[in-house]
Image (cartoon, rainbow, N blue to C red):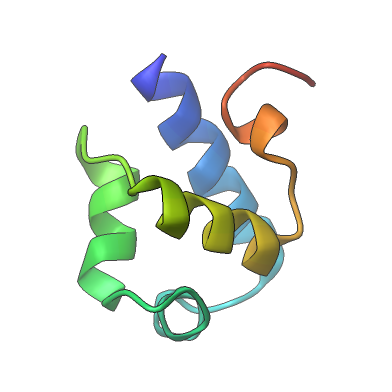
Length: 68
């Protein structure tokens, strides 16, 4: 499941057109942390996950693989 979340998150980040630094600033984490979410098994905390969904304008269900 972690791989599916990582894959969808990375795709949404690419499609957003935002830089890692821009997204990190909107979400309130470091750019390095955004990179870790895409390249490691590290998942964001729940509150960070919600801010990521809002910043990327994507549903949590989609990122979690619960919907297409």
